Amino acid sequence: MFYNSPAAVVTVGIILPVLDALAVALRFHTRRIQRLPLLTDDWLTIPALILSIGIGATLIAGVHLHALGYPTPTIPGMSMLGSRSALTETNPVITITSQIEWAVQLLSIPAFGLIKLSFLFFCRRLFCVTRKSLSHIVIAVMIVAVAAWAVAFFSAFLFACKGDFAAWWGSLTDFITKCVDTLMLLYAFAISDVITDVIVLLLPLPMIWQLQLPFARKIGISCVFLLGLVAVAASVARLAIVNRNYHDGFDPSLDEDLMITEILWWTMVEVGLGLLATCLPTLRFLFRDLSPDWLLGNMRSVFSFRSASTQNSKSVASTIYITHPNLSTTSHTCIVGVERQKNADNEGFEMRQPKKLYDNRPPPGRILVRSSVVWNKEAGM
Image (cartoon, rainbow, N blue to C red; front, side):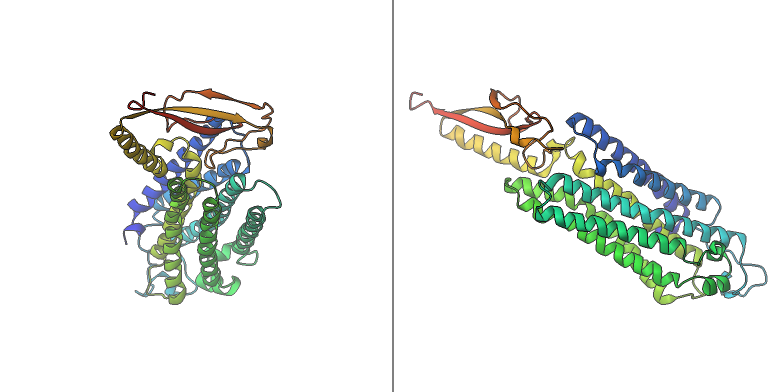
């Protein structure tokens, strides 16, 4: 497989953490431009980024030590079946491979949890206006469930060998006798990871389609949120490999180091793409002119303009900003069409001529209302 080669391992170990760092930096930059406070969903990306960098560095170190991406070395005098056919034997390379596997597992579990929690807190920031709303209750339940899921599996992997940590990278006899069924544990973790990914990803879609927004904009926002499907695809691929290894069991004819490399490669891909996808809805503000709903809106405006020209009509667009004190809240967003900000105390409205009809953003605490005045030359107006 291409993904268990040294080049593939080093590539994802470098590129994905770099992309994650760029996405997180742009996320904080976007908040500064929007003049929004940094909330829980933003701060959770910092430890998630640190863990992503840690996983990447661990994989690169594994390749450097020939513990990942290379066939399992055999011990002189052992049978040709492989390194683990001798139940009480081991060697330094196998030990390093097992230590790297254990370290990546302990880094990836909190990383997965922080990424899911960041996305859930972002959804709460957008859609939960009151604490009594159904959306707030559903998201709060998911936040608790994901946090408990991450803590439970982290503890399970940390103490899988009942406090004898060296048994994890010792001989096969020590691993079997002193540790729990780690294949079953890894299998359960992979299945639950896919399930929680799907639930978290689909959770905001009903809330988006309940908003009073144009159809094209709902499609565009949904597409931005569904970019997380690439991370779900990575988790499904990792589950497929874990499922194969689980049913094969401790088969001495299989190359252990390459099997571990496959799982860790997909783990890095899932963490990297997951953090990247979590930041994309926020970064939509920076690239709003390239969003699907903006493109569809401009296509409609072109056709509308052509239709108005054939009728020998002209139009002038104006923009009304309305400020109302009831819009005060702790955060605001451009996605739902209303920008809300704390301490929006002034009430009134003003009219301005926008520079671009479809690229005009309301100031914080004001609702954007576009209107147009149409007159016809033939009517003498």
